[in-house]
Image 1 (cartoon, rainbow, N blue to C red):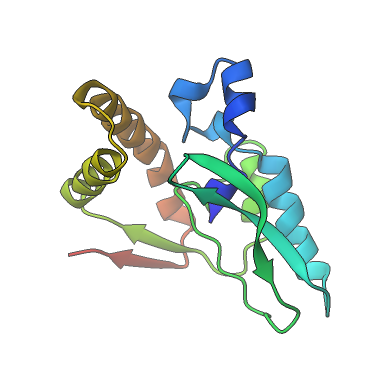
Image 2 (cartoon, rainbow, N blue to C red):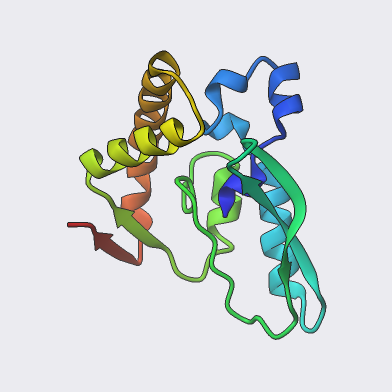
Length: 153
């Protein structure tokens, strides 16, 4: 998951970005691109990738094991395939790009549920909704590059 490539909470806080988590600027794009290159070059070596742990809303380095037998790597996230600026380097490493065109109401419901489950209050949930829908507006640009578009019902 691309969320594993967020900068750590401590780094976001140190740079005053904790309230923007999920925006393009909060991802370690270089590490994400390096991991894609490493996978493409690896033939028979064990690899590890970071994961995002929702319970503490932070990344966990080397949490996902990718065994040598894996030859198809799926990566997911709101900005996979984004091509503006440095993000184009990561996009160019993808062999196929699928775009999930999700229903905005379903997205909002999931955002609210996910945040209620971890005990966030109404004000924080409202901020998360506003942030995430702002991020989604950026991700719509990916549609033009998608090899396949999957529409949710």
